[in-house]
Amino acid sequence: MRRRPGAWTSTLSAALGLALGAAALGTGGCSVKDDSGGASGSGSKEITFLVFETPNLTPQVWDANIKRVTSKHPDIKVKKLVAPTQDRTAYAKQLLTSGQFPDVMVAVSPAGFAESGNLYAWQPGELKDFTNPGNGAVGGKIYQLPANTQTIPVVYYNKSLFTKAGVAAPPKTYAEFLAACAKLKGKGITPLVVGGGHDALGPTWAGILGTDVYAKNPKWMHDRRADKVKFTDPTFVSGARKLADLAAKGYIDKRDLSRDYAATQQAFVDGKGAMYAMGNWFAAAADNPETKPKFEIGQFFWPSDDGKLVVPAFTGGGLLVSAKAKNLDAAKRFALGFQLDKANLDTSTANDGLFPAIKGYTPPATAGPVFKAGYDLYQQGVQANAVVPAFGFEAGDDGMPAGVVEKWDSAAQDLVTGRRTPEQVARFLDGEWAKGS
Image 1 (cartoon, rainbow, N blue to C red):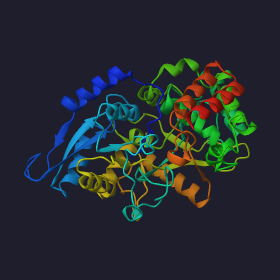
Image 2 (image 1 turned 135 degrees about the horizontal axis):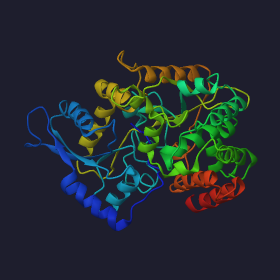
Image 3 (image 1 turned 90 degrees about the vertical axis):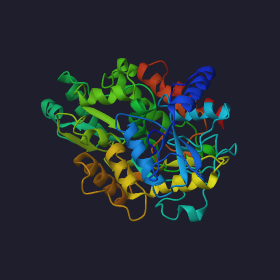
Image 4 (image 1 turned 30 degrees about the vertical axis):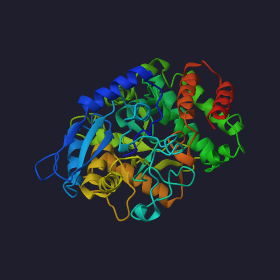
């Protein structure tokens, strides 16, 4: 359930964060009763579990998922903590500072926490049921369960608007993509729906960098860590220029950067733009009868210059456990139980559009059409050996040092607004990398 890995642009002040942390622990958390009919009992082992809520991941969904695990482990009592904003990683840092670090967390970036000894390192035998047990390692150790795969981005498109603009979908090359954008804009249709911040603009840039950087060198981020490549190299600058050009041509509206993630999704659902580059978690909303759009949705992966298939994806992002949890064994059992429960996995496909990376798992027959289409597209990419990392959404040794992703996010906005040129953005990111590494 790794959706949005914890690298976000907005942060709270320390004072506000501590106040919110106290509020969450004092009144925002809730106990989930086990099947014995009580939330506590003699011999019960309490753990705290930090979650986040979205229109799809409601309190009821979390409570049901938690109870499936505690019903199998009646000695475990769970106190659910809800992050007050979507920036779970920043909130976890605030809780750590205040001495209230959660025992178990979901969708929090391990960067910084792992290196400082605050996270439990999973042992190989505990990862035997995961298809990609080495993904997301930090210093060669796994701190976040590699529980699911997310394609970031898939380009979802409004078939009605494509037809209206005379676009033959989907475009297979980047030149065809630009031609489609031009036709859409010519009909008064916003080609690309975006917003501000990591999840609302980041996937668009991740699509570009997947084709321009990772398709040429899947180990680019590891090479950056080894100082073999830089952001100022022509390959990355070319990708930055593509994002800036999309905005300069009016295919991205810089005024839309005021939208947050939820507003960006709603704008696409409301038909305010033709294409929406987003992680496959959007399938949950697209298949939900209460939130799905009135138009038919198509999907394609961000086109490369030569038309070669490139599938940006990340496998990881599951639960993390505090190394200093009072009831460490209970925390570990809960985390593994949560991630391996078949009903929970099925729920994650429906409520978060995830592709569980668990051996032997197959999605339920009840999975929605948008999810199925995206899952099939991903499988085609796997068969074609076309899967590359999702730039900016990786974690651990596969990603950027702590704090650099936030700068990458702000750099994307700078490119769209024209505040910085591609070359200036590249120099800025190299400088921030030097500070964070």
